[in-house]
Each structure stands twice: as structure tokens, then as C-alpha cells.
Length: 238
Length: 209
Image (cartoon, rainbow over all chains, first blue to last red; front, side, top):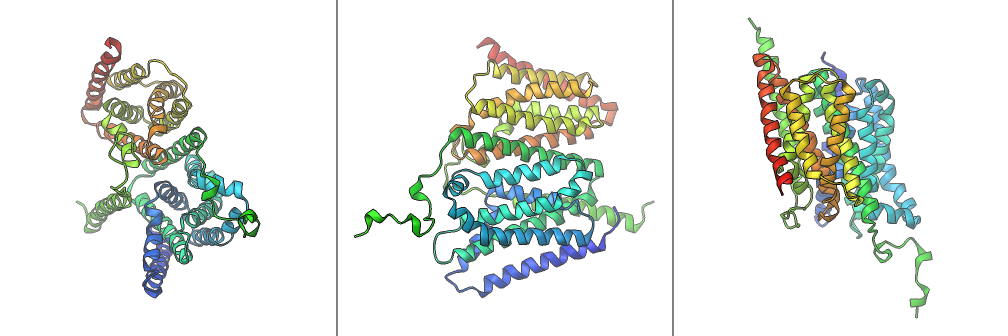
């Protein structure tokens, strides 16, 4: 495979930016917030479903060979993460049945796995059109997942922000490593590995969907956060 | 004679392979040991080790990869891709509580048939091979599916065993590709024979119990 200096520059720039932001964030926060940032940054690594979906997202996006297009896909990913962190939380919390569904079941990672898995299973000529969709969907999923995993206290914003950065870092690392692997392995062997990864993700998502229906164990409504002033129990007032 | 540049590229390729393998290992999450992961049905670790420790599953899945590599062409990927997808369908049947008879015998039969297919270097038509693989995958998936709801963390358990299945297939493809050339593939066929004999051992259990 010929050298693509443009893509190399994109990887180096993306890695530098993400490392710079992570280190800057970690150093600039007060000491009592530090462990929220640490836990947020490592969150995507310790959630298997999310980790595999993000790695698969990177594998899908690594198929983009045009540097400008790759930058635009990464921009879509980051925008979707920010949207997920900022806006979706409010939307989801407002609609209690939706919140109950997302908290009670692994819906977010299941949908991410299914999307990335299907993208890896389709032929490369069709996959090109799926790059922005996969980036947007995975970004949104990451944002929602991190927000819902955040601790319910004063510093949850730092945790969410760090979680979003950690997730984007996993995707960028996955893109770069996959591109490296593309150069080492033959095209046919790489295509086989991509499709097997896709089949893993779809199979795991199907099983999670079946488990979700079979187990039927949503959380009690008492465990859900309040949706707003309308949820105040007036009977308990003095 | 290779030039210095060629040697450097070769060395670089080896380094990159080692780097990728190391990074993949680093990305492998370590479960919190305080959780209930030690039982037979824990979380990711338990699900991942289940197909590897169970030799009947291991041999059948290895055989799928080896047979695919032996047949060549599209079969290199269609067989190992079909297996986990249909296995998931079998898993869903297991989760639903449907009683599938003779599961252990079906799994043993899969080891025998796939081993024989490799031993005789059977160049089956693609649809025949896929149908065979799909039938056997249902039994393997079912065996996992009935256990899934009892797992401590069913979601992580299912991800673990699906990933392990894929890894075994990749290893199988690797073995099949490596053994395809020496002695005109005779090594690969011998391995298939050994797998088939192992399958007879697994079949003896359910048949005489």
C-alpha cells in the first residue's frame, strides 16, 4: 500500500489534540475533581460493549482513505458526542419510558454494535456511504452512554466530559492501528478479519437483544432520577 | 539479494505486528476481581473461556476455520462469518427456553463431520457448506443460550463467548492457511482426521449415557 502522508498527518494531529486536551484537563482541574476525570477517561476501556463498538467504529472509519473526508467524519463524531452529552440527556430524562428502557437494558451499546457490525459486513463500495452515519450514531451513543454512567453528584459534568474524550481517543487509536494493520496484512486477509469482526458484533447484539427481551428486568421507577418539578410527590408535603 | 530498504520494511512489518498484538492485549479490559467472576457463569472472562475450555466447541470452531481456508475463495470468510450469526440464532432459541433434543450429540456430530470434511479435503459447494455449518451452529449456540440467563452478567458473558468464537475461527483460518502448502496439504488433512476421531470420543458420551 502506498504511503499516504495526508492520513499520517491527520492521525498525528488527532492524537496530539486528544492527548493535549486530556492532559490539560487532568492538570487544570482541582484535586477533588481529579479522580472523576481519571475514571471518565478510562470508562470506555472498562465497558466491554462500548469498547468493542468504539473499536469497530474505528475499523469502519479507517476505510476512508481521503484525509479531508476522514477529518469531516471525526468532526461528525465529536459533534455527535457533544450533542449526546449536552442535549440528549435532557430529552431522555424528560421521557421517562425512554429513560427506563435505556437504563434498564444495554440498548445503546446493542444498537452501536449492530450498526458497526452491519457496516463491516456490507461490501466496501457500500460501506463508503455509511461512514458519516456510523460516526454520528457511535458519537451519539457514546455521549448518551457516558451521561447515563455519570455519578449523580456535583462533578458529573467533569466525568461526562472526560468519558467523551476517552471514547473519541479509543476511536482515533482504533483508526490508526487498523490503518497500520492494513499496510501489514494482505488486502484479502484483512477483508476476512473485518467481516469476522462484523459478524461478532451482529451476533453479540442479537444475543443482547434476545437477553433484553427474555430477562425483562427494568429498574424500579424509584431508582430513576426525577424528570422535573412535575414529578414531585405533593402528598409528602407538610 | 534483498536491499537494506527491503530488510527495513520487513523488520518494520514485524515490529508493527508485535505492536498491534500488544495494543490489542492492552485494550483487553481486566475485570474487577471483587466481582463474582470465578463461577462457571460469570461475566466476560467466563464467556470468553467457555468455548476455549470446552474442547468440543473448540475443535468444531477450529474446524470451521480450517475447512474454510482449505476450500479457499469466498469460503475463507463466508463460513466463519455464518457460524457466529447462526450461533446467535441458536442462542436465542436456547434463551427462549425451547427444548432442542440431542444437543450434545449434535455438537459431537459437528466435530466428526467437519473433521472428516477436512480429512477428505471436501470441496463442497458453497451453499452446501453453509447449510452444514448453519445446522451445526444452531446446536453450539443453543448450548450457550440455555446457560446465558443464569450468568452473573449475561451481556458480558455473551460478548465474551462470541468474541472467543471469532478468535478461534481466525486461529483456524491461520492454521488452515499455514498447513495448506507443506506436503500438499497433507498436514491439514491429518489434523482433520484427528478432529474427527476426537468427535467420536465426544459422541460416545451422549450415546452410551
